[in-house]
Image (tube, rainbow, N blue to C red; front, side, top):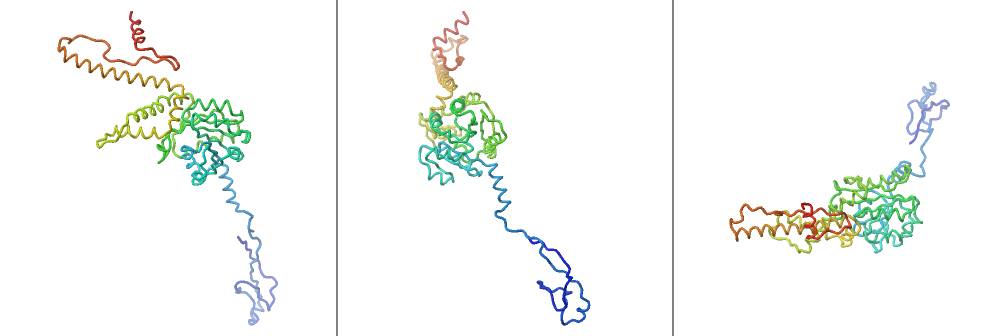
Amino acid sequence: MISLRLQPYTNVKPNECPSLPFPPLSCPSRFSPLNLSRRRIAPRLIIRAMDTTQHFDYESHLSQRLTKSTKLKIAIVGFGNFGQFLAKTLVKQGHTVFAHSRSDYSEKAAELEVSFFKDADDLCEEHPDVILLCTSIISTEFVLRSLPLQRLKRNTLFVDVLSVKEFPKSLFLQILPQDFDILCTHPMFGPESGKESWKDLSFVYDKVRIGNGESRELRCERFLDIFKNEGCRMVGMSCAEHDRHAAESQFITHTMGRVLEKSSLHSTPINTKGYETLLNLVDNTTSDSFDLYYGLFMYNKNAMEQLERLVLAFESLKTELCGHLHDLLRKQLFGKAEEGVERPGDRMLLPELPQNGSLLFSRSENTNKERSYFF
């Protein structure tokens, strides 16, 4: 930008005309004696200041500084199916994403604009703000112990996305130095259920250990904002409470899906909506590895109780069905001879289950125990 200022001519000679882009009306001319006698004062433009070219675009520089303050450097450890699924959204939101995995995913990482590191030491020397563990449940401890923690910044934030929560929380507290921050999370969706959108899908999190300091709190919030900005339903919940609910929902869902898979269900020309739902359940659950299902059972102490309840529920339902069939046969055989005779135990209810780790009573033991209440 050029700044101009008007300044009058004070020393205009009769035979001179100032060199301007256009001649002023009051400019004296040698052919005009009248103008020579009048000598009117004519204005002229003088450059007072001009912006010089800067070494950098200041506004662009400020924009870059703002971006750096709101974006994170996130290292994904375990770049399998789920890690790649999360990386797409992280990159889309402008975060810098690194990846490391036991297998070579360098080509896939390049497609997603992710920097892939075959060596964990090289990854940690990038000093990421967040280490995001996307490993399987059963390999989490091995992977965590193999990371060169000494090469990371002392207050690095560690995040997991496992389907169980008390197990990784215990590992983090046991292995990670005190200065490291810990955030346990569980996206309640995956590559299949979240391939279209994450809107209204649940995201569970527990701030296990976030150090004092505004920068560390902001870093945790910025990571949570990744899922909040995608429309997830954010659910703050303790790891213990999560595992209780997950055993009743996620573990049972995966169990039923795998039971139905073993039944070899197939689509038919007359599928009902309910049957279509069962087929979709089989597809969604069996697309995950068996290691995931085994981890849901092995590393959630509430899973055994749910499995026992499920087995007893099948036995109870089978007994009820057989009981109705038996009644029907008796009526056909004996007719009205037994009308008005009341028979107890027409409907079998599930006994109250003991706490995890306790053995269930056998049927005979349950029967004797119930009789002892009345005699």
